[in-house]
Structure formats: C-alpha cells, structure tokens
Image 1 (cartoon, rainbow, N blue to C red):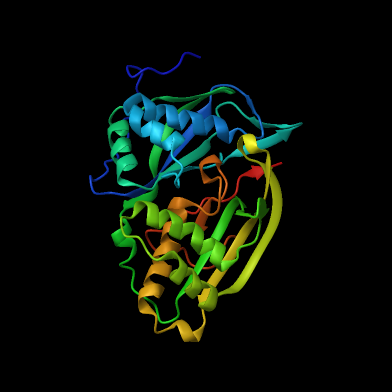
Image 2 (cartoon, rainbow, N blue to C red):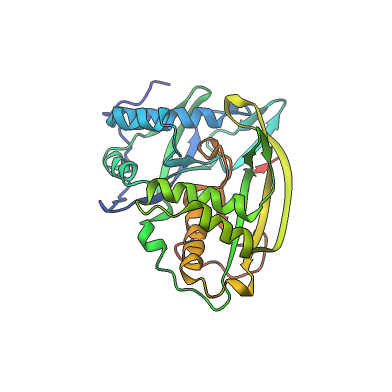
Length: 308
C-alpha cells in the first residue's frame, strides 16, 4: 500500500472547524482495515509514530517539541476500539470491519495545527503492520478552553465520577502504582493544567487540600498488565471511581471549582503516565450502570474494546 501524499487527500472532507482560541479537543476517526491485520501487543507505538509524522509534515518544529520535549505532552492517543481478537501474541483485525481510534490535544499550538490538518486530511492511516482506511471523522470531546472548564457551577454536593477504560497507573519510586488514590489522580491532571492552561496553580497547596478533603465514595476496579511502548509491561487499573468531598471542604470554593474543572479535563488529558501510548483513557460517569448519561461537555464515553 503506497503512502499517502498531500495530493491523496481524504474524499470525506470532514467539515470540522476549530476556533483559533481553542485549547482542548478530542477527535475520533472511524477506520476499516483493507485486509486482515495482525498487530503486536505494543501497536500503540505505531499510532504514536503516525501521529507525530502527520504533525511533522506540516510543522517540523512543533513535531520536534512534541517528540523531544521533557514536560508533559500536549496530546494523547487511544487504543483501538472494535472487534479485536487475540491470536498468540498478536491482536487480529478483520478486513472491512469498523474500528475507532482517537487522539486528544491539550494546547493552543496543537489545536492550531489540527485546524490546518483538517483542511486537507489523509485518507488512510499507514502503520508498520498495515493500512486502515479513514471512513469517518468527528469530535470525541468538544473543543473548549481551560477557562471554560472553570465555569461549571458548583453543585450542592460536588462529586466527580470517572471511568478508566485502559490500564492506568502512576510512577512511584521507580515502580508502577495501580491505585486511584486521590492525590495521584488529581496531581496527574494538575500537571497538565499547569503546563498548558497559562494559569499555574500552586501544586503543593492544592495537593495538600486534595489529600485532606477528597474522598473515594465508591469504586469498582481491577488490575491488569499490558504492553506499553518500548519500556515493556505496565500494571494498571481499569474500572470506575466516584470521588467526593468531606463536609469540612465546603467553604473552599476556589479549590472546589478547580477540582471540578480538573475532573472535566480528565477525558482530554487522560490519567497517569503513558497516555501518549494508549494508557489511562478516561471518561466521565460509571461504566455499565443505569445512571443517566452525563451532560455536555461529557458526551462521549467509549466502552472498552472486546478482546477475546
């Protein structure tokens, strides 16, 4: 399969326009393999490379910063969703079956890049393992800004319910910590906020507040080990967690507002480490429940891929 050139653009012409002030968004792509494909366990590295190559074709300097930058990365990529089946040590994709893949962007500079990219998008995703046709485009998470995330009204009983779709873990003393401890969860989001929002929050004070007042109200999680990039296997948790506040926190309205904003940031930035290799995918709400669907901007909560 020949590589896509800028003249071999997608005939879909996705009419998605991003305002110049947008700082956060998620895109989902509908995909179909041209033939049966066998993907390695660490296939997310192939999507990671494809994404950076797309950036490089239009903005070499931005691509270099995304690849080499030592701070938090202003993007995430997902794992594939769809009919995946294991065969030995590989994942099998079936030709012409529907799959979904998404990426999110966390800064104004990468949102500006994607606006140009969508004006003349590729028609295929070419991986080392094979090619997939792009058959559909849409927003996975609506375009927004960090300031808009801070405008959500504080409810009488503030809670944040999140579901972790792919293994999620944190670095701790050179090892993986596969537990949804509130300080680790919200530290993960605060790092991205401080790097990309332009409004840096005192990390120590806020995390002390989280440690003192944020509670786990309920959870349903389990742990699993997964291959993630060149570093080998990662042990992480998946499932759902609901966080709440102790009654003594109710007067700290500024921190409550920030805490709720970070909960809204979670689907965009993912949770924990290796979010640029498909780990830590996060959505609002409780998985496999009869609770009402969350209100915007949380319109999308992908179910976990079925792996047989």
